[in-house]
Length: 139
Image 1 (cartoon, rainbow, N blue to C red):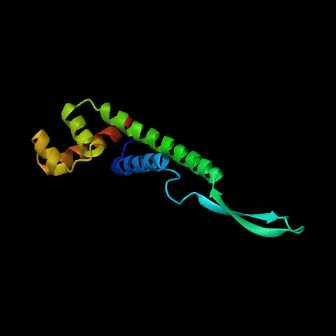
Image 2 (image 1 turned 90 degrees about the horizontal axis):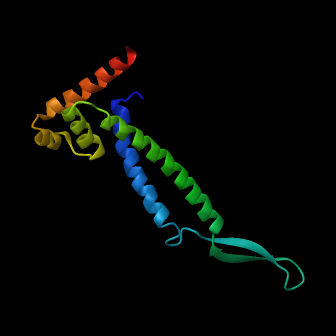
Image 3 (image 1 turned 180 degrees about the vertical axis):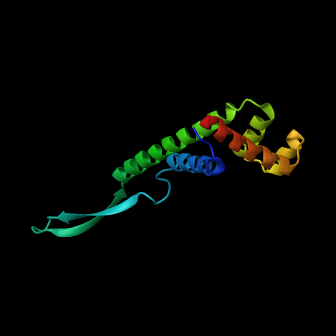
C-alpha cells in the first residue's frame, strides 16, 4: 500500500466521520427526524377521500441504518489500513511520530516536545520517511 501525506491527513477526517456515524446509529429516530406522514384513501363515506396519517417511518430507519453501517465499515477498513501501516514502521522514533501525529491527532510542536525534537525535525522526518517508503517500493 502506498502511503501519502494526503492519505494520512484524510485518515484524521475519516476517524472523525466514524465517530459521527456511530453517534447517528446510536441515536437514530431521536427527535422528529423519522416522523413522517402518508396519504391513504378513506372509504368510510362510500367514495375515496384522501386522509393524512402521521407515524414513525420504519422503512426510512432501516434504509438509513443500512447506508450508515455500510459507510462505517468502509471508513473503518481504510482507517485500519493506515493504522497497520504506521505500526509496521521499523524505526521506533518515526513510528512514534506518525502515531502521535496521525492516530492520536497531536500537533507537531507537542509531538516534538514528547520525542525531544524540533517541529521542523518532525516535519522533515515525516516527509523523508514517506519519500523513502516510495523509493523502497520501486526497487
